[in-house]
Image 1 (cartoon, rainbow, N blue to C red):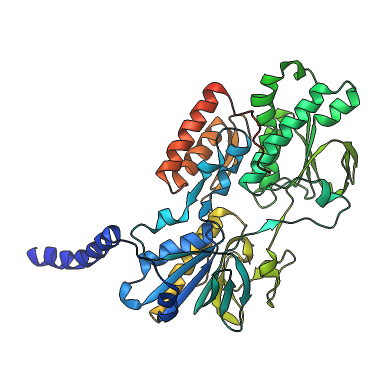
Image 2 (image 1 turned 180 degrees about the horizontal axis):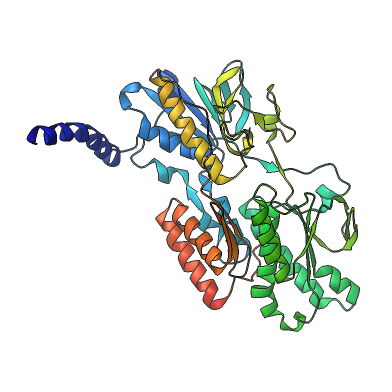
Length: 452
């Protein structure tokens, strides 16, 4: 028995020692010369869900004796927690509560950060050119994210409002306040109706949550400041080109979501295409809708720096990767998140461009890289989703956990609990709890904050 205990202790002590060393060690600043002289250089572009998860996982998996430099490059000094963007748009929290400084993650860890613009990627030379100078690499991880895709429809780029960042969330609030104020001042009933008509193009997750957020902010926030407008007809229209909402979810989830939205009074038009947008109306395949507010949430595309690469790409510019998330012909390059056009190796289904998928890809990429440095091979990427959550406004949401789908306040509470625990900062968690609590008691923020 003593021998068994001794053997177990010998197995545990090295791991425990390494853990203590990682927790207590101080982060050191790596110079460009240090990076260039490292035996293996792993360059990670983008500090989003995929890129940051890769860096954190590599810190756990790699040994200091391996002489590996892990460098994360991002033009921002923060990681943006996109799922909580809806609470900013609905006036229940501030943008600073949903971002975490990247250097916060560096405490006691071995990866490094370069705050710079990415200018060009040369796959042949294995070099990334940045505003801080060139950085050659042995392995490259692309997790740059995406931008809103604007198809070539008349008037779309000129009149549509995107929703992809904290600035867009603030602009949404500003625009809704302007619209309600203009409706208040208008003496013409048709013009007032147009100001109180809000159209969202795109029936995916973003479009669904955007329409619900608009409804939530108007009813719970603005109309309490303009009670005389309660009798005015407000029209929120959600237009989706697919035959059902949230087409990447299950049919049961789509049906539940549509039911909740319609119960709130949101008009759902599926199988309908947007054809043109003007300042005063949107033209669809089913007719014209007079309005002054049109949000576009119907797709994403890869940034131009990715589109410029001479590799095989999907229609939206995302890079088509193999079963190991590598670029065929450039196996030293891994692509994650929105930048990747990937398929699940087991189901052969397309992997959705979600934060959850990007995190799984980042953890997998780190395991593959750690294995390669030790001369080991890894199996193909298999995505095991934990479920599907969507916020649908006034204390309701939809949750898909396995084959079970439910809505209402239980789904709303699960959404908030999951993302509150998931944001990797105790400071942000505390701020979110305080802000959400104040909004529940005093109502959402209804003042404008213009950042031009």
